[in-house]
Length: 431
Image 1 (cartoon, rainbow, N blue to C red):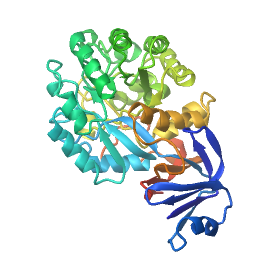
Image 2 (cartoon, rainbow, N blue to C red):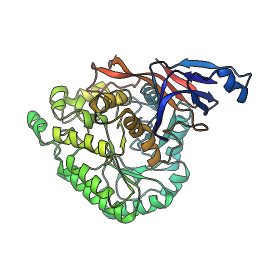
Image 3 (tube, rainbow, N blue to C red):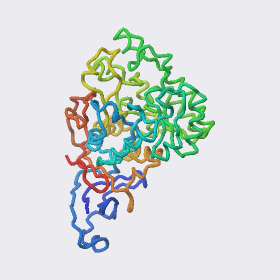
Image 4 (cartoon, rainbow, N blue to C red):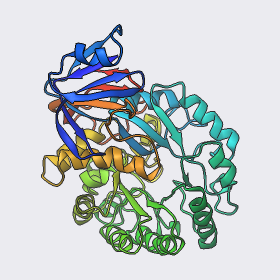
């Protein structure tokens, strides 16, 4: 048993926060009680002879284990960048107990066999690992996968993340089939026909490097088309890593017409602008790219008013050799699992845009609801998945549990130190 005492609990599932102690028995929360309740009184009701480890959480916030529904663990096929084991360690270090993997691996997750490999390997880690399956075979946008078989094999949802689905008819059919299965479809919204060089905004940053870049219209046009389809089909659709003010407004308006519309924001899009690409080069190159200050503020406002439901890292590891290539040749993406909570505290809570309760809701309960995961809340009888962190302590982002270190935040001192991550009732990370 674990008995967590003296901390400040935040539960976005119930909206309750305050000073509570938590008793964990097995992989469930056995009791949430007023602070100072003697352990003997609880054990008399639960298991008088049990061995108990007490965690003193004085000065710490106790929250549900964080949930990230957009990560790349590169396994199978690209394990020199990351694998399921190293990705799980990075997740635990960042306070995450549940993650949903994207399906752009090699081979892609377009068959039950590949999906089964990923999920079986995930069970060997200390966290809950789920995976999306592909919308189309080979991510080629031509033939839909056997979504029914993939759902039966355990797919959490469907996506061709990394490659937009250009065939409107195929997307409409995929939305219909996913709706019948009760699974979300998550879309990467960039029209490649409008992009000269991906990963860099077609503005000041592109001009600095003397390239064409990626214009905002590439995202806006796709978001506009796909929201119309989702509203018509009444299918759960998530707009991934939203980056433009226009797309945020399109989502805001679509939500008025349908309860099936969702959107996610990545920490880099509410923290950085295209100036970071000029300062950090390929370490700040990502798809969709960092935009302008007005876009960053629009993403924050979307998080504040509910147009954007959740925060997802788009954790995208690459090797140092790959990121050392010229700006037009280096792959897009940054790691994010170990800096996400800190950036949320610094950019959203400390700046007064969100309360800590609202931040935790967008990093746990909201993403879990979309993917129908039993996660993101604290309740008696609920999963014993928790993160304990010191929101005032600071740490230097210089060593990562991830195999990769491709982050523009490397070297920065950030607020919010994860002290314990508990998953399934077991301490899987202890600082």
